[in-house]
Length: 129
Image (cartoon, rainbow, N blue to C red):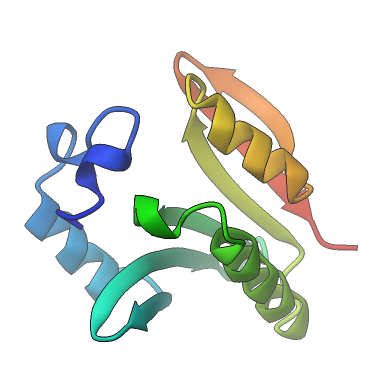
């Protein structure tokens, strides 16, 4: 997490304790995808399941800058959509900093639709067909 901390619009470490956040993801996130190349972490992806609403909430996607732009984020989202479909979940949700236009463009390109805006937080959803 420290390696991608400064890639966030506002560094994650300014909002949370990185060790505690990583532990929370490890302990409570239902799934965590790690992609490694030659023993180096390239990306991490974590989400929570809401069994009652049959929705998934993406809490964290981060990809090292040198690996951005090669389709890794889209690949991970496609895998999550497949997982959601295979487990009968119907909705994928996330929040993004509204100042991060490149991320908003990325999610919209991946069929996410804007739902609400609260200050600098933009909520997006993808409904499975």
